[in-house]
Amino acid sequence: MSVISSITVTVPATTANLGPGFDCIGAALTLYNKFKFTPLAEGGLIISVTGKEAEGVQTDENNLLYQAFVKFYQYIGQKPPSVKMEIDLGVPLARGLGSSATAIVGGLVGANQLADAPLSVLEVMKLAIAMEGHPDNVVPALLGGCRLAASSGDSWEICDVPWYGDIIPVVAIPDFELSTSEARQVLPPQVTRSDAIFNTAHLGLLLRGLQTGQEQWLRTALQDKLHQPYRQALIPGYDAVNAAALGAGAYGMVISGAGPTLLALVNQLQSQAVQEAMLSAWQSAGIMAVVRSLSLDNQGVTYQR
Ligand SMILES: Nc1ncnc2c1ncn2[C@@H]1O[C@H](COP(=O)(O)OP(=O)(O)O)[C@@H](O)[C@H]1O
Ligand SMILES: N[C@@H](CCOP(=O)(O)O)C(=O)O
Picture 1 (spheres, rainbow, N blue to C red):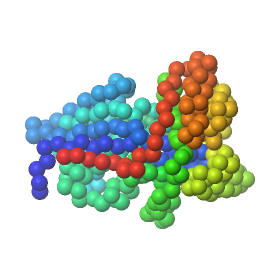
Picture 2 (picture 1 turned 90 degrees about the horizontal axis):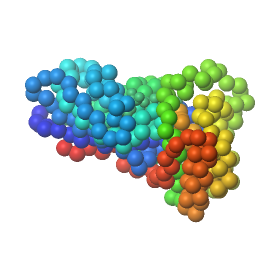
Picture 3 (picture 1 turned 30 degrees about the horizontal axis):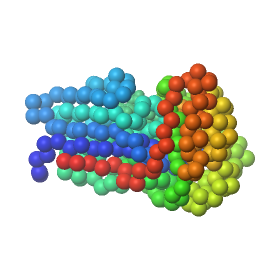
Picture 4 (picture 1 turned 135 degrees about the vertical axis):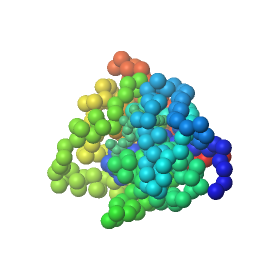
C-alpha cells in the first residue's frame, strides 16, 4: 500500500430537478467546495472550515463530510483512520446548490483515495445515492455535466444529457437558508395521473430543448407540477423574481434543487438583463441576494495528492 500524506478533493455545486426532472436530473456548476484529508498518526478527528458561512458547518463527528468518510470504511469493512479534514467552502449552504452532495461525494472519494481506491466510480456513486436518498445532485457532482439517472432494480442507468452551448445557467442565491428536508416535507405523498403525465411530457421536451437550444421547447419544458407548486410558498419573492426573469427574456425560471436559489436558463444576449432583473426583483421584495452567471462543470469530482 502506498503512503499518502494528504489528498485534496474538489467537488462542484449542482442544480437539481431543472423544473420537471424532480429527483432524476441535475447539472454540475462552476462553483466548488474543496476538501483536504490528512491521516493523523496521533489519532483523533480534526475538522476545520474556511470560507463564507464556515460557522454553519459542524466540526465534530456529526459533520456530513466525516459521516460519508466513515460510511466508506464501514462499507469496505475497515475501521476509519484518524484524519484531519480541512474544508474550504465555495458552495453556499442549504441554498439548493447541492452543498450536502459535495460533502457526501467529497467524503466518499477522499476516503476511497486514502484507502488506495478499492471502489470503482460506480460503486462510489451507488453509496453516494444511498446516502443522499436521490441521485440528481450527487451524480453530476461526481461525474460532471448534466446527468439523468434512472433506477433499474438495484442499479442505476446514468445518461449524459447533451447541453446546447448557448444555454447559460443564471443562479439567484438569496441570503436565507432552506434545508432540503424541510422542502421535501411540503410535498404530497401522492400525485394525480394528470400531473404525472404533465411531468413525463415536459421532462422529455426538456431533454430535447437542452440538446437543441430550441427556444419554444425550452420555454414550455421548464414547467413542473411535482414539486415547485408546493415549494414556492417557502421562497418569499418567488413570483416577482420569476416575472422579472421572464420579462427580461429568460427561457424560464425554476427552483434550483430544493431551493431557495432560483435558476434561470438564458441565452448569452439576455444574460446580463436577466441577472439585473432578478436581483432587483429580490431587492424590491426586501431580500438580499447574489446573482451569478455560471457554466456547466464537465469534470465532476477531481483530486490532487
Ligand atoms: N462542506 C460541507 N461539509 C460538511 N457538511 C456540509 C457541507 N456542506 C453542507 N453540509 C451539510 O449539508 C447541509 C445542507 O444540506 P441541504 O439541506 O441538503 O442543502 P443543500 O441544498 O445545500 O444540499 C448543511 O446544513 C450541512 O449540515
Ligand atoms: N431532488 C431533490 C434535490 C435536492 O437538491 P439540493 O441541492 O437542494 O440538495 C429535491 O428537490 O428535494
